[in-house]
Length: 520
Image (tube, rainbow, N blue to C red; front, top):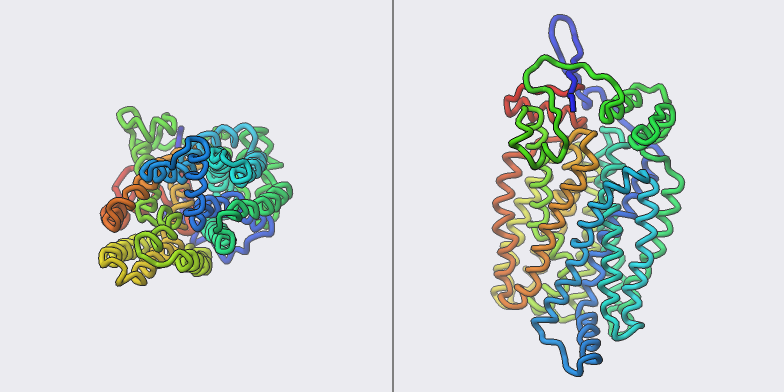
């Protein structure tokens, strides 16, 4: 990989013009709006739905698994085994997501972003139906696991595809706003299943929690049919500059001869090696290493360019892992359990309070949509991490008081979910993709999201059985890492708002005093 150096000359000095300085008020086009909504429905909405669909009817589904066991074996399942099975049913989501994320890189390269989205979205339907059919095929509770695996596998594919596709097509000035919509739709998916869960959390009706999702899948697939393929894939697969320029102009809402289109086309050409690049005499500017060597083989990729890219890529990994350890993702799926079992609300109160939290969460997801490009990514990350630490601490204290402060537990849980929704929970979805060059984008996003999923598996699998044994102290699993990551994020996270990835890399290089300059 050769990284060229390009500067604009003004008078006798050398100046670098940033995207933020060049940008005026960019109005999102109809095409980028449709693409963003379709990606949100196929990725963020589904993630929210999968994560929350077991939350409110958890007692009924546990009872169904136990009844199925009795039907087959003539005796009830031991409590410890039932808790492990329930944890496994929950972590089917991140486990299958990892395989989907690995599969996404190959599918995006072979079929393109558009057909990958259509194939993965179609797989949601059999996944949903199998989950619901488990009840009707009693005692085949294993169908819950099979359906959840298929559903989650498809979501893993769409999660990677959504991040890559929107970064490749959205103008830098509104990229954060478009990507941040994922969190709004994730909250919407969670809210829908919680709303359905209030009346349907009974022994007979819990399968109907799954079925409303099928209508959403059909809508998203129809929207994908309408939008254009990613210009990056068009260049990689067909080397058709005119077609790529037309698609890019449609997404940017400008004419095909607009300078912003030409600039993006050059980035596409550079990323696939179709254009001869200028070479700088500055030391350490060139790197001939692959993305995997840069990220995982520092003894080989020792040049300054590789070191810079590796640093930024691992900062992206850190932010994703930091979000997992805030506990927001895990505790959202266990909110009814926390309120009912640990905080001693009644079961009816717990389901309604869980729904109320989901309802409150929805407007908070709009905060990053409107402000992430204005306030910046870094403040949202750091502030939300600090508030998360305080919220978890409040929950531990309130639960330890054994029910007397149960509303403090609800407040702590609600604040934790809301602050992450408008902070690191939203930003972590696309932040890592803003830290790596375009030619490494697909492979790096797949790898980075894999680390997030691996962490999520360990945390979610450990929390439920541990909480049933030691109660509030199980939240130390989130409190201690959150405190550490708050400090690390403050020290290491660069700002990426309204900047191209090359501008971000140049800023990091300047801060670390590295002799590396990427083309502007």
